[in-house]
Length: 269
Image 1 (spheres, rainbow, N blue to C red):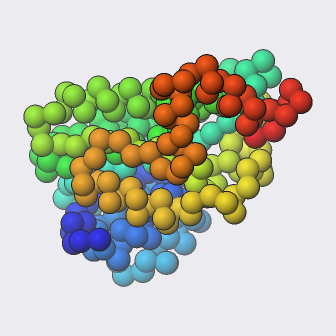
Image 2: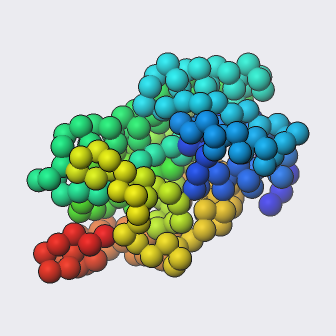
């Protein structure tokens, strides 16, 4: 990778785990000035220790809270002077059939995934426009194809994709690039932290994490796409196949998705 990221100020939400942490671990050696937020103070402290002496600003924040987002973005601009790249990575999933899920579960997923992206993007927008920078949303295949047992998650990611597509058009002549990334199945904590029907973390992944792309490999793909100023990025063969099938053969996609997520009428993934 070139020196594109050298001295660039990159704000990454949800940087204490998974893809966010992978992005930071790649960005710091590339010479970027990185700011990140998360809800877990201990994990953020571990990041600081891991990258001791490097330009890393950490901030405890819940992106579903507007004031937390404002304090994170404001503090980043104070520390580094502005923001070149915003990567809206913070997110949460769910695993429950709609008939079993409490409404609050879907509300919480929407608040973190969509409103967190909205808040941080709006708050960082003037600085990014000034620097002709980049806005990124880490979305999901669930933002192209609704996934059973994840109705709230799919709704939030469809919202993220539509929001980013709208502002990409708004900013077309500003020099700002807007892109959304769909990693497919990538090793991360998001499935362990996914909310069950009662809004509690399910605590274990129903998927085989060992067969998935690593967070660091995903980070390299994302950063390469940012450098190339791409519009969208869909990763993994399964992800690309799902998007293709859903676009051109939606009824067939319905059947294949049902078969993948259900066994004997029960949700297994």
